Length: 337
Image (cartoon, rainbow, N blue to C red; front, side):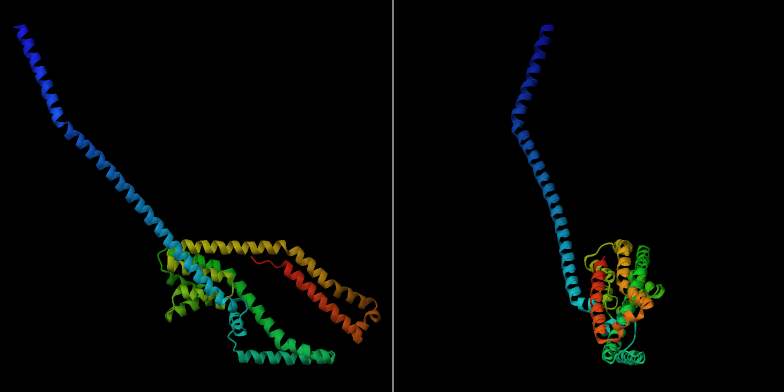
């Protein structure tokens, strides 16, 4: 009985092993094909993932390249425009200089003022007994030199006041944009609340917008009435942001910080060059001071310089060379920041 059970169990085990071997032999190719298909599917899926990632990278690179190209084209266009406006910015005609000085004087009235200045200076020189051959030079200075000097002085003073207020105006625009207001409202806020001449310049932008000119184009025209690099920077930032996009508040904030750093650098350069300027003033004033002291101590010794033609010629030559020396020293001490 026990032997019969062992024989029966052995037969069952052998039958199970045979059935398993037969099933494995029958299903081996199917299992192998399924594994191959599974491996192939994983390879295809991995390749598709790689292609998708590569496509995303290519699209991102293409977008960056397209944006960089748009910025380069914008900068090139702005550079061409700046070159076209350089003549009216750096060496503008007299009519533009009067406008940049903040004056509303017409050319006819300016010529009238120049004639009045010429007549007054000429009569003043005549009444102090100036030699007759110097009167035409005095008349020329009164007609052409003094009025243009006044225009240049007012122009530089207006630019200085603009640069003092402009970074504050940019900060106000940045806060307005960050609070959710559009750029138009920020510009109008400056045009009504800021101090002159910033107020007048932004008012021109608002007026240009009312007649159909976009803010970027009106900002680029600011250099026509405010000939300074800072106004050009503002126009370029607005133009690039309008064409290439980006964070306007961050761009204007960076511009404000750059303008403040430029102002600090100018003040530092002025402080470092103050010693050289003082030396130049002393050197330039020394001949005049010495001549005055000699006149006080021995007037007969120095009077031939003023009473004789030879002395006048020597004074003229000396003044000419002094002028050249002062001009050279001034150019050596002036730094563009």
